[in-house]
Figure (cartoon, rainbow, N blue to C red):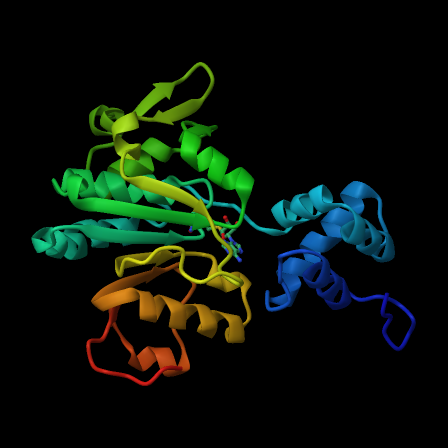
Length: 284
Ligand SMILES: C[S@@+](CC[C@H](N)C(=O)[O-])C[C@H]1O[C@@H](n2cnc3c(N)ncnc32)[C@H](O)[C@@H]1O
């Protein structure tokens, strides 16, 4: 085990050990968020950093637990309703002429974002054309995404969020019930099977793996994921998105994320959407 000049192991050094003894590389995640999460793992398991390191070297199942603990899975249906409203009214209708519409949700977490999008496509009469690849590093999140059963949503106002996207008056649940079975007794909603037909939920690590499919993509969603990475890693991943998109393909980032430097000139901004410019560009 390597120690710093004070003879104490650092979080960064722990991430190096994790990289060497597992398929995961979190070294280019932004420091604060990941350090707080490593601290929580240490507290929950009552381990020093050195003990955490030893357990990581020896126990494969523990490594998976660490990965689940250091990734942030927060998400919700129609998160940032204004973005979905913009997509619905101004953007997605232009895909009407496509024979197929290929979508990639990178970092889809428990899937609410994926189902939000498919609802928009169904309301536009385009659902049959859509093929979705939804990927995440978290096994647990993908398991929930595949089931499409969400707890504690009704009290959190998920129906109001939904209605605001479609300008439906509060209290009118008719459209929501087209897509979800509502189980009030257990405070949970269940995605109706027809919405799941054209989705492939795939485990994929954005840091380590190439794009997990051959098709070019019309729209890539990567919302509230890049924010956890440093600029170097963000740029590497945005280059991959750029290569994977058709000309004029769209990239949708989170409300607090944006493109910087080189990539600002390679995409044109339309509201919350980045459209790949169709001019030939050198690679980053
Ligand atoms: C905060 S959630 C965002 C979910 C959804 N996109 C949204 O905006 O509501 C971030 C997701 O990124 C995933 N993630 C983090 N690192 C990743 C990586 N290296 N590869 C793939 N997914 C990753 C996490 O597991 C988590 O589900």
